Length: 75
Image (tube, rainbow, N blue to C red; front, side):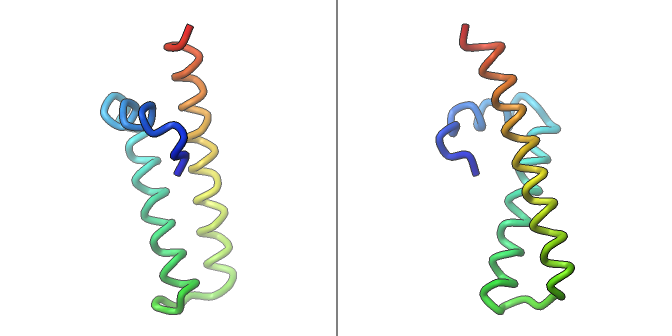
């Protein structure tokens, strides 16, 4: 997720516990969604869509934190 900001993500994961949790949950969802889409796990389309929406919200939250970090630290 957000590979172009790898350095900032690393810093935020160590400096911001909430960001670390958001990032970890996003990665958990990414793996679970891939398992379902590849047929190794099963769930309804409704449940899968719900997970995809949660993942997207987490990505948006992480991206907002990255932009805030850049704004404060790259002047």
